[in-house]
Length: 49
Figure (spheres, rainbow, N blue to C red):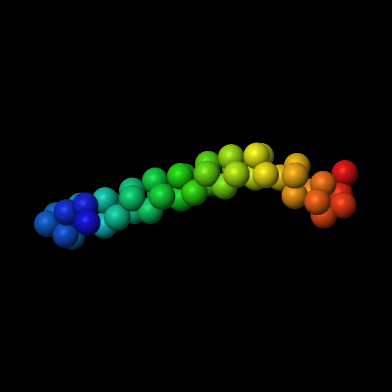
C-alpha cells in the first residue's frame, strides 16, 4: 500500500510503527471532534443534563 515492503527490516519496522502512530492520532482527533459535535445531543436524548 505504501511501499514499505521494499525497505529493510529495521526501516520497515520503524515505518510500520510510525504509520500505526499516525493512524492512532487521526482516530483520537476524529473521535474527539465527533464526541464534541454529537455529545450534547446524545446526552440530551438519553436524559442527562
